[in-house]
Amino acid sequence: MAALVAAVSCQKNETNFSEKEESQVVLYANESSSKTILSSDFKVSWVEGDALTVFNAEAGSSTYSDNCRFTISETATGKFIKDADDKALVTECASYDWYVCYPYMQYGSNPGGTKGYTVALAPMQVGYNNNNHVAGNDIIAGKALAVADGTAPNVGLHHVGTLLKFTVVNNSGKASSITGLTLNASAGGSYITGSFTMNWGAEGVNPSLDANQMGSSKSYTCALSVVQNNGTAEVPDYQPIETTIENGESVDLYIVVAPFTIPAGKSLNLTVTGSAGTATLTKTFSEETKFAAGTYNTATLPYEPINIVFTETFGENSVAKEKVPSYGKAGLTTAVESDKENYSYSITGNASIAAGTNTHKINNPNYYGTVIEGAAVKLPATSATTANSGLYIKGIKVKANTTYIFKYNKSKGSLKDTGEYNTTTVFKYKDNTVDSWNTVNSTTEVGTITQEFTTGDYTVLDIGVEATDRNPAGTITYYPALDLFQLIEK
Image (cartoon, rainbow, N blue to C red):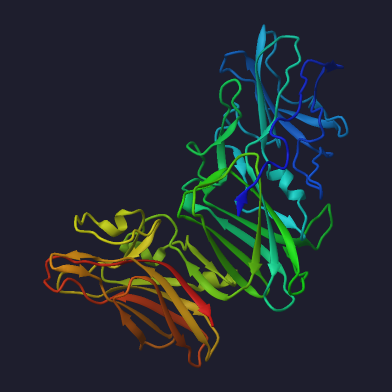
């Protein structure tokens, strides 16, 4: 994946606020190249129903008008008229500052947005190769400062997000539907969806989304669903798309996210879902790669699914040991969404879920090993003489007499005075209705641990991962951190 040049010009429309018709304020987006409705040649245009948010203020003042709504009047000319019953603009000043944004939303009482410029966490594309949804998610903004009263301001509108098109090729070996795509850019450390504020910048500086002042809705991921409308235009009934494409054919999927950067050596993770299963792809960048505002980015993804029963990343927040049974499954995804409700969690010993790099250091100056970012399971000993602690996931729906692969990531423990020390972890599984566990193996290895096993004559599974030994001297309790649990049907 590489960031390409912008598909549309960053410098946009000349917007005229000075003309009035029958006491109505009129503005023009004179070029029909403002809104991201993409055709095959990437021409963009205004359509019926479009509306802008407009603020103004006396030049240099921070006393703004309310967010005034301007609605399209002529799509061909880009003529907008202020809604007659809308709130008033600031008037009777020698000069004005103007702030304009598409699409219209209730941003609040000032152009900064009070954390309300929303980049969709879960956009919806209706049908394959359809980019109509992009327009509603593509925020464009511009300003004109110190414009004299009676002078028409020219406002250049700029894309503040980055557009990505993914061409998904069906390599599943059979006709399949493609029902969704999730982009995970957490390695960049910047939120790409959620409720942003707007940094309008000084004269000559383009407006930009401000990830430092966000609302409670924010994420490093964007999860696109592909749907079909089983209802009508007036009363839609959106359901997961069932249309299949043959093996070797492809479809295009589109998302808009806030700008982000992936550092050198870090990865961008993508998950494609469809009727044949789930495909997980990772792209590691050899050099820092920017997905900048106003750019159009493309990638081709093979849909080569594996049947992932569940993935558990444990989210981003710490969960104390006594609260693990009520953990909210913030990092859990299941192949069948309703199955998620059946999952439950329990622990032994001092197991808990901890967030941040301190998960693996725990104030230990001799810490050594790879840090897993985000939340992870920590398995410390109850005491120097009580070794075992573990985390268990119950109620997993599986197929009887079927081979599965269980995977998890494990960090190193630490260094003792006498050398490297890695804690042993054990994977267990059992029929949900019995008490006895099957132990697959014990390992001191670190990194990605893979366990293979075959279910018996049952359809509900419990699994567990335990840490079974500690520092033999009994003076320091070393332990690993575990992350990214995944169960895959082989």
